[in-house]
Image 1 (cartoon, rainbow, N blue to C red):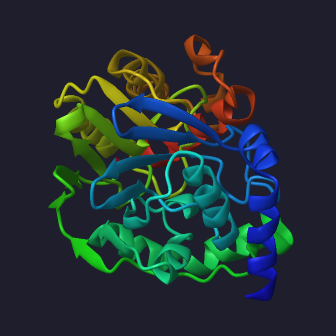
Image 2: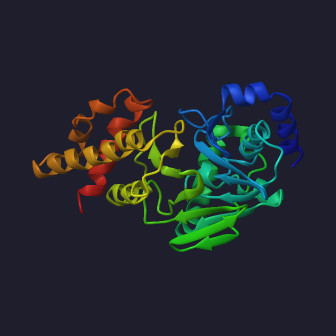
Image 3: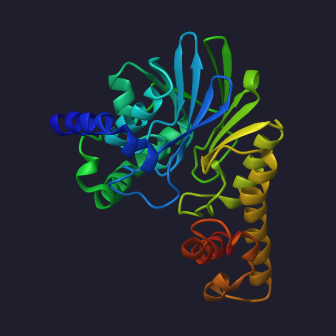
Length: 304
């Protein structure tokens, strides 16, 4: 706890470093901000905040979409929020199963916030908590100090509406995407969609071990049916629906189409990195992830 408090003081004492080098606070529309983390891997500098988070201000307090990737990461996120408002964060929504979608929960709960997540997300958190903590200990070192897995206070199966501060936050789980419990959050009053890891822009998505690419495409389409004007993605800057379709939906469809063709032709997993993906080569992390994504998709589709 002493180390965690010391880290908080350090972050608050040097907001220029915390915000300029790690987190960008991006206005989206009235009362809504995206807090945009870096596009690279987790590190002691970003404290597992290599993702995008959402913030909505209401007359009754602030609602935060995703809590940060560690206790100290949540403190860093709080410092960014304080550049926008002195409101208390009263509700926190976990949109999925990645570390930055839930491992900061204990920080916000200690500050009085109520955390909301799908039942599938909480099951995923519980199943992979040890794996996340072990991995983060390698990435963050002492930056993981203070972090303890903590789970949502309120859970739901498929749909939950948070009526708060004159807004209706429609939280929707339609199946697995990047992780089994991914949800999107629709804020109709501002025409904003918070997608968590259902949408990646600016960087190539990661087709990790917890994903389901077939379901991910369907979940994306369920989200897109709302026709949002503004999208706060899971990674990258706030954007629009055409960009989200290009960088995420189009990429996933291409992966499954090309790998399906490879399997029909009798190819094997060693051939998978050779599939055509050049249309997305301008995205950050393409060189490190494209081949791995193809092989992961082959493993997934081989026995479908």
